[in-house]
Every structure is written in structure tokens, then in C-alpha cells.
Image 1: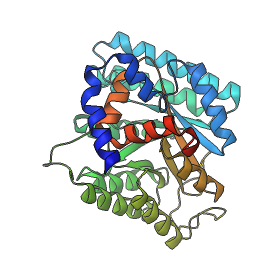
Image 2: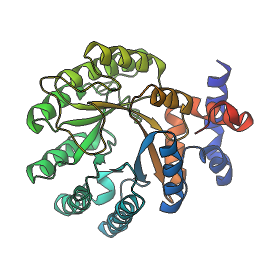
Image 3: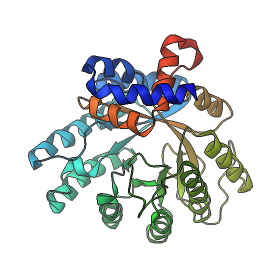
Image 4: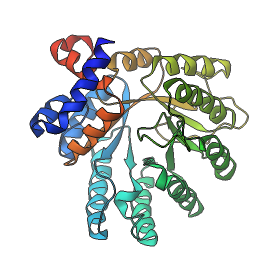
Length: 326
């Protein structure tokens, strides 16, 4: 209770505090301002048996010219991953590539990055933004696969009512290449289209895990919630999925470079490192979302608003750094 109150209090006053204070709180879960900072952290995470997903921070753009930066930066990320021989994916936000400004140009930008990544087996995750672009993002995945660019999947947010139908549609249309990052969802959506209470979101998340596994998807279980983690562990055991077990589902997904046996656990950088390391020690594939870039402030504020408890965990980790290493 004290931690939750502290987190909410801190989040409420952060917008009025100097930017460097937010940076002090946020530096735990943002890799830095450039790719070199991210690479250092990724190498350290690999020593902890974790693979990574790299995200260049930035969202909806106002001009198509801005998209050029993201295309070029992701090309540099792909080159760095290959040069350092890292087990890493990339995560992109479709709106940062101009999807809402000019659909054809946005698709061209996205396909350019996806094609380059596919040449060396790097998987591309389309991040999911708010409900305005849910269908557009799913349509981009389907479009990429129709062009035989199959190293592409998306995030699905369990708080949305529509997610179960989206899982069914994608599993049916992608024929063994359905690949989801399932999460609660960071965007606070209206009650007309989403679950809004904690337990209803958790319950939806758990049933989404079951549905995606039963329909043959590769499932990235992205959560720090112990209730969801416990449920996921039991769900995997029921389907004989787990460390050192081959995925024997009749409709199991196609094997890909750098993937686990039908599933993996995913965490944000700097959050619940103790749980991640425990899962990795047990033999589970774990992946850490590593964001970097100049827009660290906007990302940090959104994360803190969505989950004020992060602020408490960050504060504890700074005062007692031995308690929860990255």
C-alpha cells in the first residue's frame, strides 16, 4: 500500500519537476540516448541468459520527413545487431513511419526495414499504440505476410474487448506464422471498448494466453504481474510446453531463428529483473524490451502514468541496489 501511494504521489508531481529529475527516475528502464548505450545493456543482458527487443523511442509524427529518421535509425540498429551477433529483435511503431499520414508511404517505410531485417533472420515486432490504429497495425502485419515478409508480428493488448477476435483472425490467416506479444496494454482506453478494472484485465490476459496457445501461435507473454505469470506457467505445463520441451502442439508455429519452444517471457528493462533471472535459470526463454532514444522523457512519463508502482520499485532499487538488479 505504501509503495502504491508513493508511486502515485511521485507520478502526480513529476510533470512539474525539472526534466533531469524524471531522467533520474527513468534511467533504470531506458537504455540511453543512442544505439551504443543500448548495445552495452544488451550485451550485459545476454550474460544473464536474456535476449532482447530494441525500440527506438518515438511515436506519431507530424510530417513524412520525420519518418526518414526512424528508417535510417532502424537500419543502423539492424547493422549493430548483426555486427555484435546479438540475439535481438526490433520493435517499431507504425505511426512513427508515417502510417497515419500516408498509408502507402508508411507501408513502404515499414517494408523497407522488415525486408532488411529478414535477410539475417531478425524478427520485427509492430508495437501496438492506442485503439485508433489497432486495425491499421493488424492490417500491416497481414500486408507484410502477403508480400512474403514473414518475420513480422504484432502486440495485442488484452484490455481491449476485440483482442480475442484478433487472435483468431491472425492465427487463421497467417498459417503457422502467427506471433503475438500479449500484454495488458499501456493505453488507458474508454470502458466502451476495453476492460478497465485490474482483475478484469488480468482475467482477459489469462484467457488470451490460453486461446493463442491453443490456436498455434508463438506467444510472447509480456507481464510483470505475478498472478499472470503463475497462470501462464500452469497454462504452459498443461500443454507440455516448457524448458527443454519441444513444442508438440499439432498446430505449432513454424520454427524461427532466436525463438523459444512456442513461447517466451518478456519484461521491460529494469523491472522485475529478479523474476526474469529466476525464469531464465529454470530454462525459460526470456526477452527484455530495451528502449533508447531522444524521446526518453515522453516514454518515461507514459510508463509511469500507466504503472505508478514502477516509481516505487525504481526508488527502492536506487536506495537498495542489490535488491533488484536490471
